[in-house]
Structure formats: structure tokens, C-alpha cells
Length: 550
Image 1 (cartoon, rainbow, N blue to C red):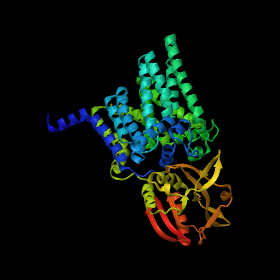
Image 2: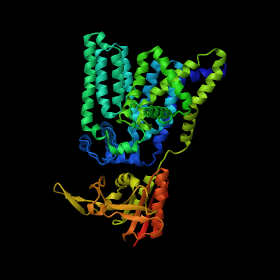
Image 3: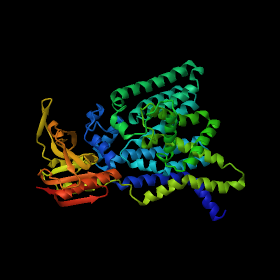
Image 4: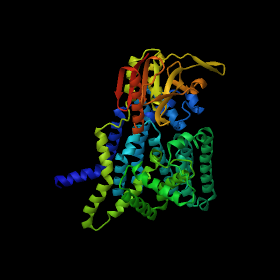
């Protein structure tokens, strides 16, 4: 055997370990970058670090207007922060562990249901797909959603393959009931599993099997009902969530051409985000062909991976769950399985066609994932430098300095003010009384998210609010006084504005999008026209600026 054959044999034997190692290294590199928390992560971090265990269990939200991670996810995050300290690595550690677990279990599951060649294709896609790598080190529950989905679908496969044995049903019942609290999206996975179980007519096997299955579904229902009453009912129909996910909920009549176009558009968009594959014109036929071929081999396997997607889409049709982007990450494993199965079938051609066809298909399939993986192996995924900005402010802040915040700078300000100890310097006079207790707050000026036009002239406006921090410096609430809310100040953008005389005054801005960048530039421009700038920290999509406002 010559050296090339030996090398080929070595790679073939160890291919799975090479792929798994690549996936782990990409995720680890992302975690160790230790980037600043951006807006969404900062919201989650405030809810985790500022709330007590009791408040989490009682579903008391520090930021009620923002979407909240699942209760069990938040508790686990709280435990890691308590153990490892309040820092970005500790906050992102559980999503990272979930992502590594998902990668390992996907390898185990896909090896059982795919041919060897299809298994390698699916595993490679799963290992390097950018959305899966990105959310492995993001303070969000999406990689945990993916882990839970794969676990439940494998448990369901075991139940089906072993004929609904009592111990398998019990394991399935307990896992489903528990994982609902770790990943709320598992309601769609459990709905799909129930559908497949019923298709197999377990009542025809024996009364015991029917009772076992009925008890399993009942346990899931009880767990979901309790979860809904405690947590989910506050999220379903939440105006803030619906506004955030515009277009991801169906707003047209259910039985209409507009709804069909909406569903088709969102389904095709899902291949790029969150699956991470472009060339939808090719990926969509591969998805359909792969599902059809798996149906021919094992109907149960195909339906287990397809039905959660259909139930999720139905929920979006009913206006209950958004069908777009990161909230669909738990469905991505099914896409890779179907596409890999299709490519494997297409490679069963006469020998003379195998090499060119293989090169063409695999080049198209892996082009985007490989380019993304290579780019982010060398470049940062950072969205803002909120940490650097707030550390600068903590160093130069004097007790009594006034602060203005851009709207989207609030959650990063709340989190990092507590983390750096800055908030302990804030004066907090009594601003009211509630339930017999005095309320103390730190007065700030908050700028609106976008400018307004009045009589043909553009204005920014701000109002006063009160940030409340506890004795440990952790953010607790944001309040506005009735008097201050009635006196909104409009700042003209075409001339200098006489800001209130607040002495040393900080302006804190943040935001990664073009809209936010533009608004932030308008606010800075207004301050520069009206006051003398003393200090500035202007970093990547975040900045703090000190002015003399006398």
C-alpha cells in the first residue's frame, strides 16, 4: 500500500474524529474570544445576575418587556455565575456545553439512521455550520434547544424501535416533561413525536402499550400546562415579542394565497438562516428528495425529523411562535439529515460519473459553511465593545456625574454598571414609596431610538427616568416619574440646544445596526454643538463621552 492509499485509509478510519475535533475547536475558539455582551445578551445577563433564585422560580422578571430564557435555563445560568463569578465566559459556558453535547449526540444519532457516506456529510455540515458555531457561545438558549431536540428525537426512535416498552415510555415521559422547562420550543418536538407515535397505532399492540403511551402524553401535557400557567402565558401575544419578530408570524387569512406565499418564503429563508446553507434553489430540492428517500427506508425516522418543523410552522400560522432565524435552530439537525441523505443517493451513479458529480455536489454544499468557518476562525464575531466602553467610564466617573443613555445602550449599561462596580458610585436619593418601603433611584436622561419630524424639522427627544440598583450594585428596575414623562425635551438637530446644566455629563451609546449607528451619530452631533467634550472612548459600535454641561 503506497503512502497515498495509507493516508486515505487513515483519513477514512478517523474521519469522524477529525470532523468532531474541527467542530469542537471552532466552538472553543468562539467561546475564548470572550467578546463583550451585546444588546440581547445583556438583557439576558441582567435577568440572570440581578434576580435571586427565588425570583427566577417565581417568574419575577427584572426586564418584563424583553423575552426571557426558559426557567430551567436561567436557573442553570444563575448557578454557573454563582460558582464561577459574574463574567462573560461563565454566562456563555452552558450554551457552549450544550453545543458540544449536541454535536456529540448528533454524531451518535445520525450514525444510526444514515449510510456511512451520508453520516459524514451530515456531521460535517453540523460541525462547521456558522449559525450552530455562533450560538455555541452566545448567552441564549438556542444551542440548548438543539441539544434537547436531538435527545428527544433519539429517545422517540428508541421507543418506536423497541415496540413501546414500558421502561422506554417512562424514560421518554420524564425526559419530555423536564426538557420543556429547559427549552420551551420542545413543545413542537413533543407534538411531532406524539403524531408519529399515534400513526403507529400502539393501541393495536396491546392495552398495556396504549396505556403507557397515554400516560406519557398525559405527563407531557401536565408539564406543559404548568409551564404555560407559570411562564409561557406572559410571552404568547406579548406585543414586544411580536414587534421584534415582524414578518415571522402570519397576519393574513389562514386559507389564502398570501399565506401560502408567506409560508413558502419563510421556509426557503430558513435554509440560509438558521441552517447556514445558501443556494436555496439546490438545497430545497435536496431537502425534499432526501425526505422522500428516508420515507422509503423508514417512515418513522423521516416523520420524527419532519413533523417538528411542520408543527412550528403551524404555530407561526396561528401567530403563536415566530418562524425565522435563531428560534428555529432546534430544527437544523433535520435539514442536515435530509440533505445528506439526498446527496448520498445522488452519488449512487455509474462509476465513471461518481468523481465529477461528487466534486460538484460537495463543492456547492460545503462552499458557504467552509468559507464562513475559515473567516471566523481568523476574525472576531464581536458586535459591540460595550465592556471596554463601560470599563472606561467606571475609571473616570465621579459620583454625581449626570448620565444620558441611548435607548439601546440601556441593557449593556445596566449589566456592566453592576459588573464593574460603577453603579455603587451612583447617588440614589428617595424617589417614592411602595408597600411601605422607600424607593431610591438614580436619575438619567434617556434618548429615544429614532428622530421625529415636526413642521419639517428633525428632532431627537429625551425624557428622565430612574435606574434602581440594589445595595450590591445590581440593576433592579427602570422607572419614570409622572412629572418627568409629561415634560419630554425635544432637541433640534440643525442647531445647538441648551441642555440642562448638569455639570460633568456622560453620554453612553451602543448599537450594532446601521439604524442605531445613524441615530447615535445624531445624538453625538447634538452634544458636540452644545457642550465641550472632555473625554471620549469611541470603540466598535459603542462609546462613552464626557461633556462639560455648565
